[in-house]
Image (cartoon, rainbow, N blue to C red):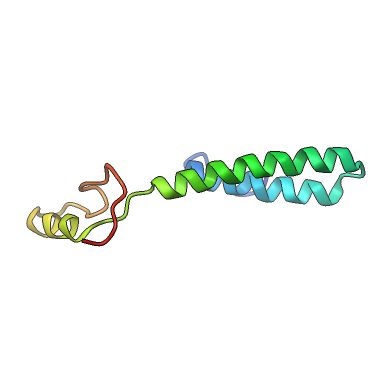
Length: 87
C-alpha cells in the first residue's frame, strides 16, 4: 500500500487511498482485461466513498447553540447522529 498509511485513518481516507493505488496499478498493468477489472473495482469503491461522504453529519445552527451552552464540548460531537443541512 501507499506510504504513511495510518491505522487511525477513517474509512473514507482508506477508500480514497485504495482508489489512488488502483489507478496507479492500471497504469502499470499490461493486460487490457486486468485494467478493466481494476476500473470496475474503482467504480465500486468510489460509489462506497460517495455514500460515506454523504452520510457525514453537517453541524447545524442548533448544534452550535447547544455546544455554546455546554461548557467545553466540541460542536462536532453534539448531535452528530445524522446529516443535516443549514437551520
